[in-house]
Amino acid sequence: MNNNLTNGFWDRLQKPIMALAPMDDVTDAAFRRTIAKYGKPDVMFTEFVSSDGLCSIGKEKLMEKLIFDKSERPVVVQFFGKNPDNFFKCGELAKELGFDGIDINMGCPDKNVCKSGAGAALINSPDIAKEVVQAVRDGSGLPISIKTRIGYDKITLEDWLGHLLEAKPAAITIHLRTKKEMSKVPARWQEVHRAVNITKGSGTLLIGNGDIMSLAKAGEIAAETGVDGVMLGRAIFGNPWLFNREVEPASITTAERLRVMIEHAYLYEKIFAGKKGFGSMKKHFKAYITGYPGAKELRMKLETMDDAAATEKAVKQFFIGSIV
Image (cartoon, rainbow, N blue to C red; front, side, top):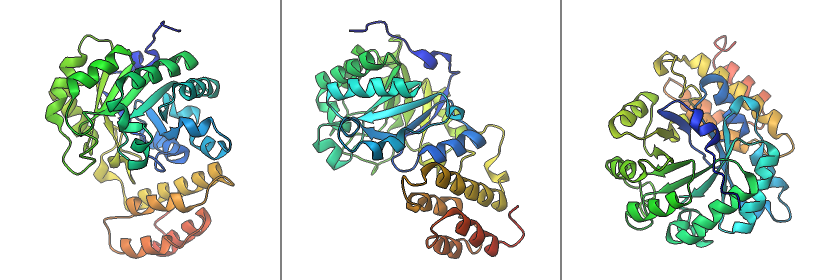
């Protein structure tokens, strides 16, 4: 058993840490690389990946989620599951691939994920949760972080965070809703003060998550609450400039937004050629294309596109001379 704990890159990050949330079928390699170019956060996470799936036959499809570029560093791979043996193997894989850290998903509220005992279900199985942390640490030697919630069907901060702190992770990101609440209520940022007090002096960083839609608001709430950082998720849709402190959101022109959307589409095609279809790219179009006359019509047109070249042609026809 490896008890030589290290926080690795986490100790080198300037506070408050601004992190990009892992979002399934959204924060893939193409989008992360685009974000790294236009507004890099302090730390990035991959989409979540099944530890069981990576240890089974046919794992090749999942390996596309583990593609990353050095421009994204520090980049953390996120695994979900509940089998410590498989987490050990995934730890070895993450080290082999060169990731900077490993995050364990203990917060996903998806019904099927929880039914398998993974994600937020681990809140009800703290002993297994701690075994999983130790297994992935033993397998990788990398800094371990955890993304979780304030409780399962009720708030259990003291008890749950107490268990997690026993495992000595480098960082805990806490989504400020219970599993039962999903995203149906506003994030309970008033609870973060309790979480800060519980983690104080533990050596584990605390990152808050939920409903924060701008870098400015993230900075304000970090100053008000004392959290070590803030994780932003939905705010990144159509906005790879989100973490860029030198860019005012209102200053980004329609032409620039569409130019970057096309660049993103070509990058997606390059990275995932032969691995997955163009459909996942299309979900970004609605976010990029909004807020100006004709946006709805253009979005509807792009829904019929099957590649980046066709996307570029359609955009240029719609905005003749505005995209260069």
